[in-house]
Every structure is written in structure tokens, then in C-alpha cells.
Length: 308
Ligand code: UDP
Ligand code: MN
Image (tube, rainbow, N blue to C red; front, side):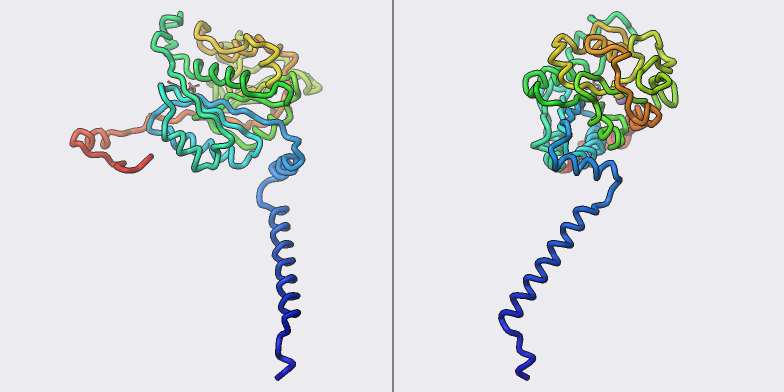
């Protein structure tokens, strides 16, 4: 019977062995975490502090689908550790919906919640009667001034205008980390301008943009969508006048900011020499609330006590 007795020293050894195994499993689990190689590379660079910060600028406004749109976007921030989200609400105050969303996504430290309402007299400033509302102008400009005040000009970072209803691949943000100081990165955008894809046309060496395939207003200086480019932040400090404007014609906002800070020749082609589509200009249809409106007439709501 006596040889069956476990001595305290053996217990200690067993505990140590157990802890070592636990540590090894834990470390191994970290190293082989699921996900594509491009994300593994991002995490490795993050540990080395070798990733530029990306400021994603999102104008947003209250409507039934707002939380759904922003939830979709928030998952990209959960995957990319170097992203900072600047959300600018088109309203007189910041809202609880946006605040709650940022909290639940664990993004309070990596986000900035701003607000500015689009003024009602914007139509007067605009000559084109078909261009009813220049969306996001005021909000993006507020974000630009926030960046010019709060970002360290000495640190390399990137800014991107991330509308809330588009569809983005995480890979697009990986591409943005390749943007060089002093340059504007550019790539194709799917489902926009009446085409399957709007894209830059490159020279034979794939080093320079020599044109664009745009079908809608191809005469624009930069006939591209807001989602087609991201800017090295040093350019904002170098060209303090660069921003958006109400006075410009429909489709000219992209050209309005870019004309100050770059030329076609200086653009940096990304996304596999502009052959990969990593962002799509999707648009969400207006939510059908016919039955909700009927309920409301009887003083009832389907979402009592719930945030949808
Ligand atoms: N937006 C806004 N206020 C508005 C309408 C739009 O702040 O009254 C925001 C919207 O949330 C989006 C951006 O501006 O992030 C562009 O708007 P939208 O997606 O409607 O434009 P489009 O798809 O036509 O480019
Ligand atoms: Mn949109």
C-alpha cells in the first residue's frame, strides 16, 4: 500500500508539468490562430509596432438600418488592430445608438464620436438642382479638422473615407498599410458609376496610373469613388486647405480634395496592381415599415425597450 502514496514533491512536479503544458497549448493556439495569412502578417507587424495607424472617417445618420450598417463595419475594426474609427453623426448631438455600438464592439479606446448637422441651406449653395444633398461633406470636413488637431504629424498614418453602407473586405485595410508617406493609395471599386467595376488604368510596368475606365463623367480630374483611395496623413498637414466643398458639382467631391494633394502620376496603385476588388459601393434599400407605421397609429411599437 505504501508505494501508492503520493508524496507532496510529486504533486508539485505534476502541477508544474500541467502548467507547462497549459502554457505551450496557449502559445501554440495563439500562433496558429485561424484566419488568412494576410491577417497573421498584420498581427506580427502589430507586435513589432510596425503598422501605420489608419483613421477611418465615417459620416453617418439616423435611420432604421443604421445600427445594422455600423455593426457590419465594426467587425473590420475588431480584426484590424491599427484602425481608429472616426464616426461623425449628421445630427445636433451624438447618439446612444452609436455610443452603445462602440462600447459593445470594445472600440471606445479606438474611436472618436463627433457630430455636426448638415445645414439646411446647402441647396442654395449648390447650382445643380438634381444634386439635392451633398452627403457627408460637413461631417468629413469636421473629421479632417479633428485629424489636423489631434494626430501627430511626425507619425506615419493613413486616412480613409469609409461610408457606412459600402461593403469592405478586411484585405482593403491591409492594402492601406502599404501606402507610402506623401502618397495617395488607389484601387478599384466594385458596383459603382454604372459599371461592374471602376478602376484605374496602369502603365505597362504597373507603377503609374495613366487613366481611368470611368463611364460616368470621365472628364472629372479624378473620376473615382470616395472608397477608391486613402491618403497618407502628412499630405493633410502639407496642404491645410485640402477639404470638401458644397460648391462643387455632383461627383466632384473626390476631385475636390485630391486636386490639392496629388496628381494622377503620384498615385500609388494597390490591390494587386488594381486587379483586385476589395470594396463595393453597395447601397441599402429603404426599410419597409408599413406595418410598424400602422402599429404606431395605435400607439404601439414592435421594438418597445429594444434597440434595433
Ligand atoms: N450621410 C449623412 N447624412 C445624410 C446622408 C448620408 O451623413 O443625410 C452619410 C452616409 O451615412 C454615408 C455617406 O454620408 O456614410 C454617403 O451617403 P450615401 O451612402 O447615402 O451616399 P451614396 O451611396 O449616394 O454615395
Ligand atoms: Mn452609399
